Amino acid sequence: MKKISLFVGVVALMGIFIFVITSEKDDIVKIDTKTLQNKLENEEITLLDVREVSEYEGGHIAEAVNAPLSSLDAAQLSYPKDEPIYVICRSGNRSAQAATQLQDAGYTEIYDVSGGMISWEANE
Image (cartoon, rainbow, N blue to C red; front, side, top):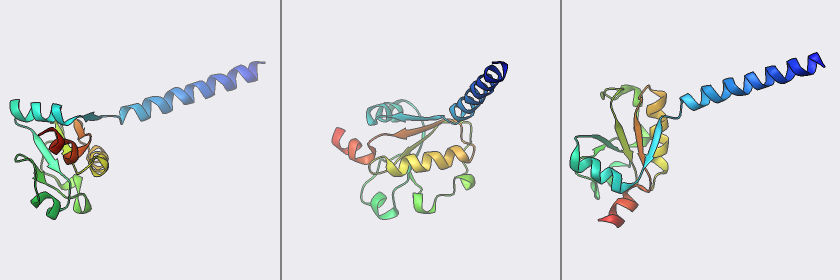
């Protein structure tokens, strides 16, 4: 009986440890385009548009900096890692990938724009 209790205790501790480790990496916040628009109107923010150059040139948010996901090296970006950084793409898929790269590179406050430019243009 003691062995079973010890085993259950060890398994529970391992579960808690895994939960703590994985929850610490959840610093990517999803925001909608209305929230992004509010931020742009009221603050100076860093907004990365991770679409390809041709997509960006076809229309983009004026404050956005083009940083295509295909060539993104988050570790080489010159932005402060402890300040907010917003990421947008066409639909939300590439921005989620870029946000993960930013997180892995040490950025601590990342906002991924849900729905991307499709949602942005629908709300204009």
